[in-house]
Image (tube, rainbow, N blue to C red; front, side, top):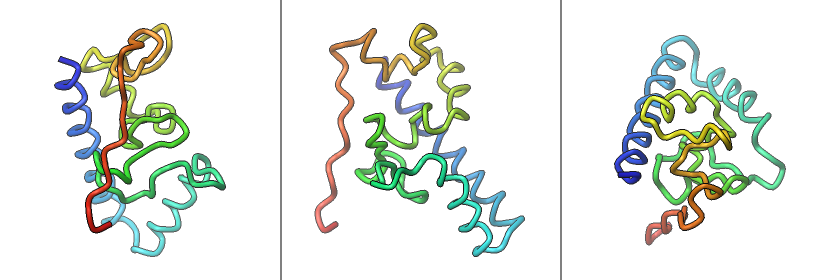
Length: 121
């Protein structure tokens, strides 16, 4: 059942990302969009680049938050806007403030693994 929730969240976050990109591209030029993306990410990207680049495919090897050890596209600590989607699917641990599907305290048997890198990359 948790796999279904994770798949649903991946789908929602992908749609959210696509919608945001379309909205940004219709309002701003490409150069100003890149500049604003750098500004937004500057708060969360550390000097040692523990976060995924802005335009990676959700669910890919590159889509990884090294700081929190979850897919970047599903990281509620880096992107609090995702919290509502997790709560809407009843995948939320109120006690620890994380998606239940990512809460290792409540689910110590849970293994969140980075997807393998595709050959040729």
